[in-house]
Image (cartoon, rainbow, N blue to C red):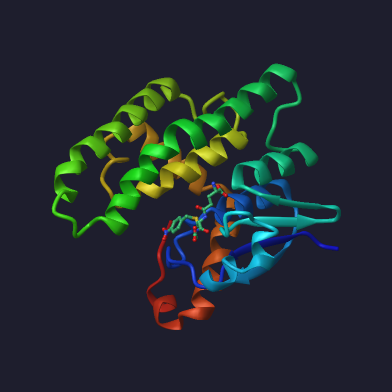
Length: 224
Ligand code: GTB
């Protein structure tokens, strides 16, 4: 059986590749691995059948022979451990790359997610504006530290790894916020990731899914 990845049938990111299936799609392209896509609606996500696959009723989920997997971080780590290309061969380099995956998911993504969630669901609350400086300040602090670490390097540990792929996937969520542009080294870092052929292929594939469901938007089309 060919592996199967679940993604939104009608992604709220409107073809920008911001939902969490995209990091798996990019990983697959970097590793030269193919999979089938199972498109699910929000209603499908909450069915008992789907929850047996993903306990929280979310995308992405991954199915391959003998293994059902959930959590985007677990899925990409599993793939990178099975196929060469995104984790260094040496013990220390591999451990460092994995550390950056966790840094992206556990240290950098939470404040970005809190800010984005506030933007999406709390916009009309009277205290929304009041919370903004605190939410943005937390992101800024992480970006400052990350930018200092990156310095003039192209990638976090010198060579592109799964750690960069996940970090860039997380930072892309800031597009359009102005926050990334305050850290030019990080804006360039994200640009380098988005210029990778594997990223471009994954981006076009997910956009084609969105365009098929919303032909009006297809004409305009977002760019990464
Ligand atoms: N920790 C899990 C993982 O990494 O796999 C989180 C998965 C997750 O949050 N999935 C979201 C989901 O299925 C989609 S990606 N939500 C439905 C639900 O919980 O009911 C989050 C997301 C949503 C929308 C945008 N967007 O519009 O830009 C971006 C990201």
